[in-house]
Figure 1 (tube, one colour):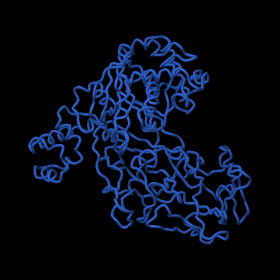
Figure 2 (tube, one colour; figure 1 turned 90 degrees about the horizontal axis):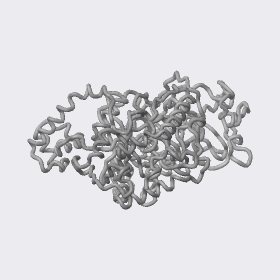
Figure 3 (cartoon, helix red, strand yellow; figure 1 turned 30 degrees about the vertical axis):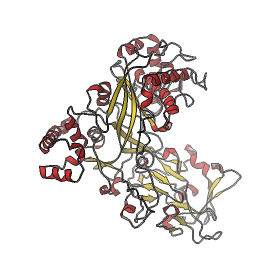
Figure 4 (cartoon, one colour; figure 1 turned 120 degrees about the horizontal axis):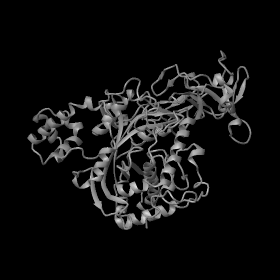
Length: 616
């Protein structure tokens, strides 16, 4: 990571630049805070193209046809010696800027912006963790370290700004330019005991006023995007105070796919997988140069003529992309087809499946169990939100408002690829249809749907079924979370490193597609050690399913959890809570929504809607 000058200030893992500290996010470092700049300021030459045509088509649908490619986040090569700030690798990173721009001296209580000249940046090229701002003229200590202001303001449209200190303490616009001080009173650091004071006119105000919605303590939002270094203006959303490092300061909006074969022949699939390199091959001479450089070892078993023919076929298939991009891109459909029919899929370096028998007692429930010994997941960051997390987009529903990654229309997106393993379970359509025909299940679906409608109405959205995934999705999602907990206990991976992918037909379309994929994917060795896929063997999987269903029958928060009513509570889940089903944000693809233990097993309040009520 770098600031305006080529100075490294910290380190992040590649996956963190997608999920935790991506474009527009604040990074709270040991001695200062910075914001990750937009992709306009990144250096694309430090990244490598990642090939995933389905994901590229999907992000083009969301952001526009100007997106040319998906690029990896910059990663410096591992160094065997110590850190050398003068090496070329020291310049590899993503650009950041200091933010918030107001700092505070913890000794004399001075509160001022960086450009006031009262704070000085102390650099240390060999120790990035020691870079800091100091207050050199402090009258109570010798050049103490200044700390970033902990208060910021943001709005629901993704704008972020420094807290309006002068406006706040003077209770409106003012011409007073006196120095400000920020101090605490009382024994605790609760908000009511935090005060800001103007030393010139001696006005002061408690920070508790900033959190009162009706107090009018904050000005109108000026539409600022500090990561783009611009002020858009014209924002009508109210400002809300947030804290530096709070979870509501940045929510990523991402798209993810699991790489599955899309071509029938092995050669065509290899060309597809290596298209980031092969797109530049226009002659046998160029192909030969790539071969000599060792970049196409996977194609060693094919002649130049065969490879060139496959490249020409690939270009011919891509000629009709303009018409195809006008249609909705299906991310999960090809994955479902590949996992449901593993025996006819070409195996490769990043895709290796093995069909196993269903566990004893579940033969009539599960139509297919597949152990995915090798998987590849590609994730792209397409935007972010602040204050409130983005709602999960559904077919037929517009995507939520998101802040931009660039000042204009971006031509590429930061992307990561990770490899791992997983277990795929597909439900028998006949068994599922019989369950859906039960009156108690239809009643439970009506309760979840009404809760969904009231939840939308409470957020001033149309009170209808838009975005409701259906009872099949809710059942599969609940089973996924219940089984995920059991897998985490035994497979050796952390619970947050296990992820889910739910395959369900849209609401009202019955039991055509119904399955779950539980997988782990990480950029290092975790996720590729075989601990998860080993639990997909029938003897292990049957025991884990039994344990998951037994635990789902009774929650430590019962009877409160089981008596949860989606209708009256205007919520998106039934019998579910943190004690029984909720999972980490990195694991759940739906934000812990549409979960209900009553759809799996009988509960204290709903004993007759469970799909596993008759399974032994």
